[in-house]
Structures are given as structure tokens and as C-alpha cells.
Length: 200
Image (cartoon, rainbow, N blue to C red; front, side, top):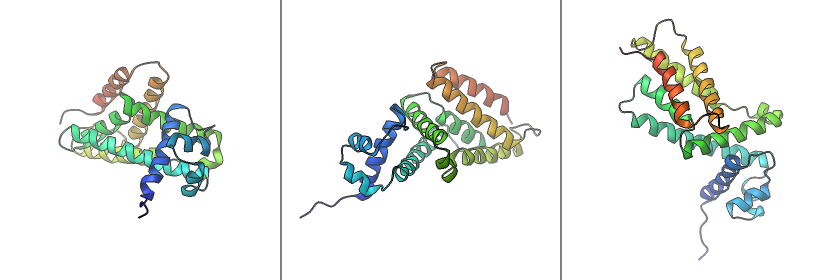
């Protein structure tokens, strides 16, 4: 009896191989053949599931988004009851590269962003929407905290959310570049969040 193939599992196996390449060697020179070798499958099988490198990149980026979402959710849950403050804090601290998993995620995202910089037409077709969604999420929760009296009334939620995302991204780059370690980056982020939120 022929063995049944789980096609989604096989697609994910190949996509996660690309993520490993993204987090270790970058994506500019990554080929379908290299991805096949990393996944332990044939080039033909990679081409069967992903007809173009762009299709493979987009699928891998979606898998990366799932992994980051799971990490953020776990981080928020670990802080106790879900409140605007724990959502903002848990989300940003989960994104910051402070341990092996978050360093891997940050390096993989950096690989995708670097590729978009070198291939702007791809960025135009498939602009990264995760940062926009993240800013909108944070802005909503900052506004909710403002309504609860935990954030000053003169704070602009969308502007503050954009600044926090930019800060977190910059701190992430400083960790990857060796300027500071994850603990030092976390202290800087916590300081800024402490200035934003105040006791009710």
C-alpha cells in the first residue's frame, strides 16, 4: 500500500529549511537547490511544491509570521491577565532578540528585509504588512490604556506605537550587530514602556 504524503507538512519542511538559511546565511544567494539540500529533499520536489523562488519565499514568510505570532501569544499569556499593558509589553518583548529563538526569528526577518532592499520590485508586489499590523495592534491597546488612565491623555497612540516598533527594531539590530546583548536591549525597552505606562 503506497505511503500517504502529508503535503502541508512537506511544504512546511521546505519552507522552514529556507527560514534556517535566512537566519544563518541570508537569502540573496539562496537557490532552490540549496533549499532542497537544507530540507533533505530533491530539487524536483521543491519545484513541485513551489514553482518559483518567490512563491517559496512568500510561503516561508507566512510560516515565520506564524512562529512569531505563537511566541507573542505565549509571552502575553505568561504575564497574567490580558490587559492593554500586558499586550503591549508582551508583544514588544517577544519580538526583541533576547534568547536563541527570538534571535533566530529576528535574523530570518532581517534576511527577508535585506532581500526586499536588493529586489525592490518584490517589495512593491508583496510589501511586508507585519510591521503595519503590529503598529495598529499596539496603537489600539495604547488607546485602551489611555482610556483606563494608565497612559497620559496627551499621548498620540499611533505615533507612539510607531516609535515603539522602530525602537524595538533598532534594538534588535544592535543586538544582532553585537553592540549590546539581549538583556541590555530589554532594559532600554522596559525603561521606555515604564515611561509610557503609569499606575492607574
